[in-house]
Image (tube, rainbow, N blue to C red):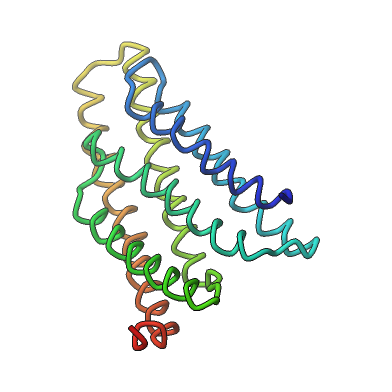
Amino acid sequence: MNLPNKLTLGRIILTPFMVAALLIDFPMHTALALLLFAAASLTDMLDGKIARKNNLITDFGKFADPLADKILVLAALLCFVQNGWCDCVAVIIVLFREFTVTSIRLIAAAKGEVIAANIFGKIKTVTQMSAIILIMVMQSVLDLLALLGVEPGTILTLDTAFFIAGEILVWISTVFAIISGIVYVFQNRKFISEI
């Protein structure tokens, strides 16, 4: 297995640890989740660059890389819903988009074709990962303030402001998910018409 594919698998392996850090309450758990998510996101940037630079692009990488992104991002968003950090409607839309795109990929794979991610999917992933990182940063600030014993009223005010900011970020990334999903379906409509 080449290095880019190992990095992709590393992203998948980091995901359950990030989930545990998000869902298990201990001091600065969100900061740990943030570090794990950032490390996993870094592997997403590196695997593609290394694969292209060293001509290590494989069918496995074309399929597994976007799948690893989906696993990481959806795990984080579902944990956000569980923690009350974002509304579930945007996450449901993203889930619908991801299931649709993955279904088309599976149909193409059954016909011997591998569909690589396009630029719109990459923009979607960047906006999602950026939103997730910023939300975790905001929640880490709240964790730190609570640890420092800052007045609960101040934390509550910030929590409300951070929730609104987080919702805006999630919805911006959801709009990109919708656009990229529509483009993906349109570009690969031949696989849908053959069903």
